[in-house]
Length: 326
Image (cartoon, rainbow, N blue to C red; front, side):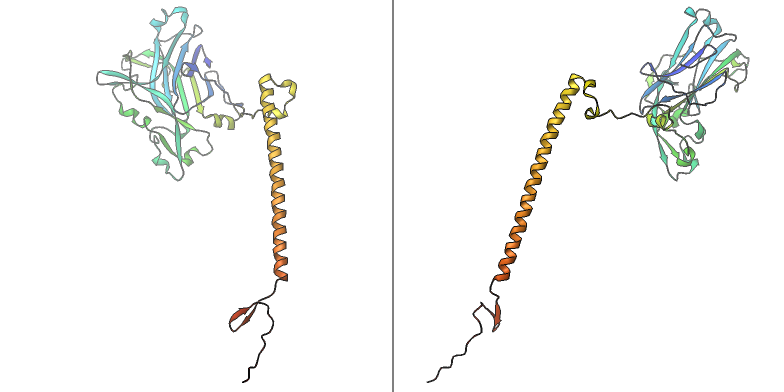
């Protein structure tokens, strides 16, 4: 998990944190970090935030705002009063998805990686989510950490009663090809089927201590397919194993040696079959040529038929005229 100012953020699948990759020559700064992670279609993921004892807690509330594909989704955080009672000064929380209230029931729609459909010739204005975020934000999970202070007219937190703000995150994404030109984006984030969720602690009356555009820490995760990560040279391409036939015999295990022997036997058998088939093919061809030649010779020396009175005469020479007298 990348760490800034005593704050850590990561992305996990099945409670296992995803391997992170860093692009050579990527932009760096004291309060921001960018990592690449691998996205597998239909895999559900969680965003995990952690506060360690190294963090200088100097505000009423510490907030982590979560954005996916440029959309604000969720917020979690910790009050200063709670921090004093945190054991060993290590606080951790995982966000599984977007939490909303449906009538009297609280639900969560889990985060899920989803493939995108790049449509050639589709107008940019027709792309799903085009009105809600920039195409440059596709393929990103961004977490912004803010210091929050009490404010008389403070407004903070998601619209818990508004399920319509998630409508376009339920359907697969179709995006114009030209919006992703030159980009390695391969997936988007889709929200899964709703599940029941415990009632969260609602927050109100807070404002940004440093302004809404000045997070104290910025974590960006660019999620890509395995192929896209290979194209970016962030992970090596899968190399084909060296054939057993090309490896030194002393390097083979007992099982590999048995496999090699079976292959050699099969290869020898196939070689014999090929040679035998070739022999029979040559013999058949020679026999066919011989028969053809013999038939040709028979035809050449056979008597030739001539026509007489419209009918064939079979090699009896010219007809003789015999006169009969009384």
